[in-house]
Image 1 (cartoon, one colour):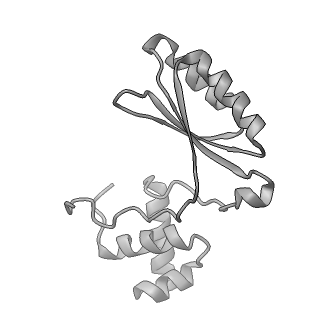
Image 2: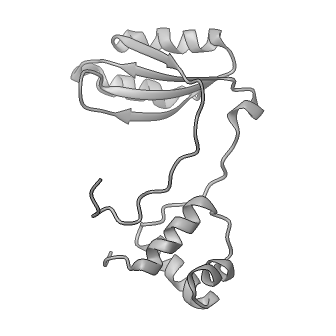
Length: 151
């Protein structure tokens, strides 16, 4: 996609925090007409910059009271099996393949400690695991509006 201008970046920031905004409201906030804002949003969707819209659900409201981060160290030969295992485990809600001593960082949401124990024990067949309980989560930050700016 061609480079994003300042208005495109404003639209992305708005939609990352308030994905249900109407095209008219997006336009009002960035100084465009509704058709112009809708056209920009559609262009961002078609080009793959906007990949979807989703509901944010409170896991605790669903009875998923245990939130854990699990680090798995495995071998290259076992990596595909570990990834397949994670994909088949509904309580594992995110998987990151990372560099360093660990190979995967997984996030799990469970109803009780016993289920977390089962998940950890099953993952341990693929290699050593380290599990940390999450005490609190903070809202995700939107992606930076200008990735070319250094820290």
